[in-house]
Image 1 (cartoon, one colour):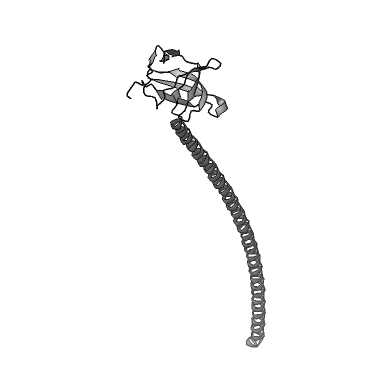
Image 2 (spheres, rainbow, N blue to C red; image 1 turned 180 degrees about the horizontal axis):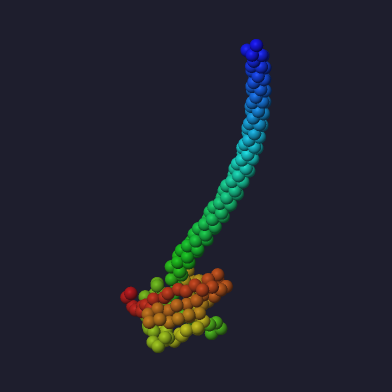
Length: 211
């Protein structure tokens, strides 16, 4: 009698345990799905954030490249202009130096051509330094310098005195004695002949018969 009563009770409790186990499995399944869905959403958010950061870095890199390119172009244009200006300045300087050198050589040639001789005096003009004709060696002129004065053909000439010089072509040119050295005389030509500060050296010579 007792064994017959206990058997249904055991089966009842076993059924309840099975139901509880099924409920727990379903709960774990729901929690697993919720966990997976949460992980997927978090992953998608992170991927979206990374994609935004990537695109932002690309934009920044493009802007930086553009700025650097513009800066390089500006520097190139600036350096090119500076190089062209330097070249033009050097060209102008070289041209001026060549012109000055040619002018100096021209003056030297003119000075050599103007190996002038002392000319005679004229009552109505500044003092003339007497010339020494090359083709008349019979004449004799004495020339010397004493105490800063030039003695030539029995006449004295001093600094700042206006005189005339005569070239080999018998051209008379007005000038002023600028200095009298120990064995040479410097003269300054008139600005009217285009030689404002030109000076010519005249070596003193004594011409005598038979020379």
